[in-house]
Image 1 (cartoon, rainbow, N blue to C red):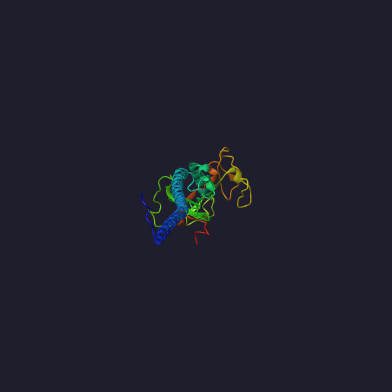
Image 2 (cartoon, helix red, strand yellow; image 1 turned 90 degrees about the horizontal axis):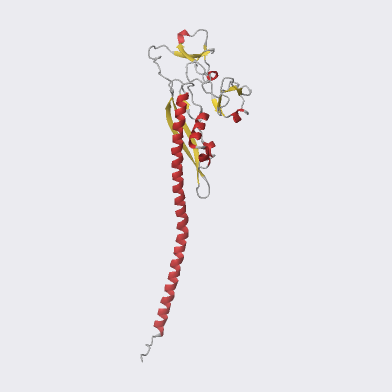
Length: 270
């Protein structure tokens, strides 16, 4: 019969202490892993959401850029009739191309109503211009929503035909006049030569007034079935066709020596 070996009391105490220390160390390790997981999971989710957000920004930028190209094609065609860009019309064409519902469900602030094309322009003389779309996207930053400004821009050329060399044949100064104007203008882009055409829907026109405080009424020559209309700040009619003759103003270029009985425009001739 095998007898049990006698273990000294001091050795038993050391073994017991080691078993307790190992158990405590295992518990500490489990606790540290739990803390690390609690910190890592939110960071991982934030990184995933940030990546999704960047993809959405890229998708919105591509859609807005393509929408500007579509609106630019329409604006270039309409420049044959009226050498100007109407920002409200550019916005409407851009939103129609992308889709109002798509924009309203996106991260663009105010959805379809958050696209601003007011800085779009077209040169009356050269027919060259630019279409600009500005908007803000909302980023889900921890603690608050961060708004990031975005801007897309393209260049356009109106289909205005051949531009002759009027100024290349003579060194004499040219001025510009309208059929009924009482003054001449040194600057072809003078705001007094501009009819200031702007666009609006029929529901918006109801509350709009011209610079004299008068209401706008439908033009007798235009299509009444249109959904988007054009008007001027000095007129009292809204037009369903941007090519309506009531919206046109003929501008002539003549030599300064041939102007008789007309003074210079106070805005551009001083």
